Every structure is written in C-alpha cells, then in structure tokens.
Image 1 (cartoon, rainbow, N blue to C red):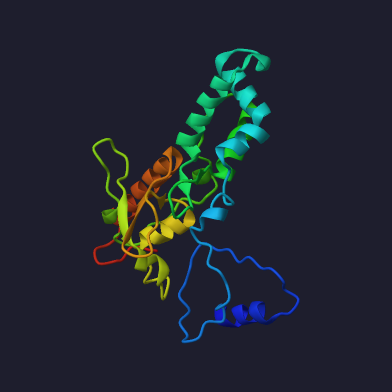
Image 2: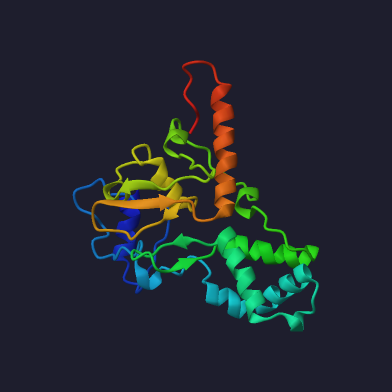
Length: 238
C-alpha cells in the first residue's frame, strides 16, 4: 500500500514540488523503491529548524507575551522589562520546552511549538507564570512496550541517562515490531539527538527538556504499576 502511494506521488505530472512528513522512516521492503528521486531531509541541517521555534523567533514574535510574563512574575510594568529579563525567561523556557535537535551537526536546536504556545496562552488567561506539562496533558504520554523501562536508566540526580543507538537502527527498519523503542520515542519527540548524527556508527539520544523528563517519569511509573499488577506470564500491552 505504501509503495502504491509512493508511485502515485512520483508519477503525477501535476506535482512539481512535494514534501512528505511523518513520525517514522521505513525501509522499502521491495527490491525497487518508488521514491528513488526523493531527497531524505531527516536531520538535514538547512531545514532543521522547521519543526520548532528558535530562540530568536520567540524573542521577535512573542515579545509582548515575554514582557507580560516577566511583568507578572516580577511585579513590574511591561515597559520596565529589560533584555536581560527576557533572556532570563527564555533560558527557563529552553530548559522546560527546548532542546530538540534535528540537525545532523548537533548545532541548531528548537523549542516545542505546542508547549510554548500553551505556556503563553495560560499566561494570558490566568495572569500567572506556571510551567505546565502541556504535552503530557494533551494525552500523548507514551505506553512503553514490554521490557522498555530496562533500557531507560536514571542517573544519580534522578534524570534519565543518554542512550547510544546504532545508526542502522534508524535508517534500516523493516517493520514496527523490529524498531527499537528508543528510536520510536525519538521519532515522536520524547527523546532527541544529543550528539552529531554520523553516517555510520552510533548516535546519542536523550531527553530534550524538563517537560519530557516529567512526562517520561509518569509513563514509566504507569508501566511499572501496570506490569506489576498483571498475572504471571502475561506480556505487557504495547
């Protein structure tokens, strides 16, 4: 079915430029791919900032929201907010909702668009500065596959440790069941790259920010509780 869809997109003379996006990359199971003339832009540096907000974009387009948040938190007028005040809030926003990287050189990072928009929406609505877990509240907390919690370990400070994954696990996937859970979590934004992306060898994956740290803690706790309550020999649901 996927190959038939690809064939339509490739052969339609009305299509002059096409971008196809998704959360996963799959190796074509057939000998001849129908997307031979497509350029794979996964981790392609020139477009690596398209899937999130940059720091400069937030500073430029959300300056009034930044001023309001600082004024509410510090009890000052909006016209008294300084560049230093805005930078301080942007630093905190980065710790909470930033850290995503889709750049093979591991240089350009972006903020979650959903979380940043939700944060400023709540500031406007509630007139308070609260860093919420917006991705978790949207119902996107992952349900871990059986055995996955064992591969996600915590350090002495309680944060999840980085994981090294072979690049072949990223680029050559035959099916969903054969795909490593860490790769799927990176596809879905719960993990992100924490190192340059090489042509071969391994890449380091890690939790991008505090929001995802808290979301994964909740999901991991739910998985452990779920598995502990299951009858012996019954596998955990995916």
